[in-house]
Length: 260
Image 1: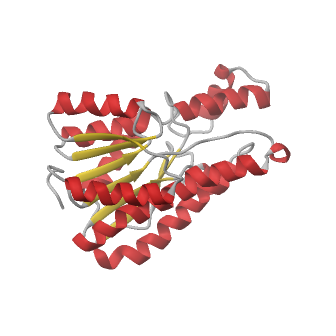
Image 2 (image 1 turned 90 degrees about the vertical axis):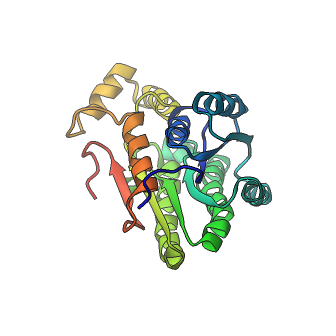
């Protein structure tokens, strides 16, 4: 096991804000060379801020992860500039909520393009240098919805379920190269853009106030609170630095809401 991530190249997608930004900052604190990817141009400013604050190499890049050619070239360029990728965190994703009968083909395709294709393309880009270097960690983001599904989120749940299957497949295929592949399955995570969008959807589709929505969902959680960003960051960091004998797993971060 590593003692720290000093000079290791760690790539985080969806890193302009919220969970992805928090993960990138955690890596910076540990001395990693951090590459932050997002379609949001704010990722460049955040990378500059972290680089100054932690005096480490931080690169912010605007990239559409649904463009396979652009993604593969991007990873080739990163390897040439900074060295082999040690960790890839596939945090980037989108959410949508609406009654099942109202889901359009365009909405399904968008969920799959970003949540599934984008994750797969980034894995392809990172795996090349990981295999050559005989080490690596891939951490994908699924969801509680990817295990048991969520009402009003059929297309999102299907996409997140695919991430779990992808994780299993890659864990088998890359194990001989000393690459561990896992995914995390958060529950409702407070103070994130995803939760803001989902809670707005529930307010609209269930005709309940945001306070009533929070109360209703918190009541289902044994630990009686929503997931917070720090819960997720700490698990990602553990899987990056430790967990040498852990691969192919889909870890719940749900306060007991999901137990398999």
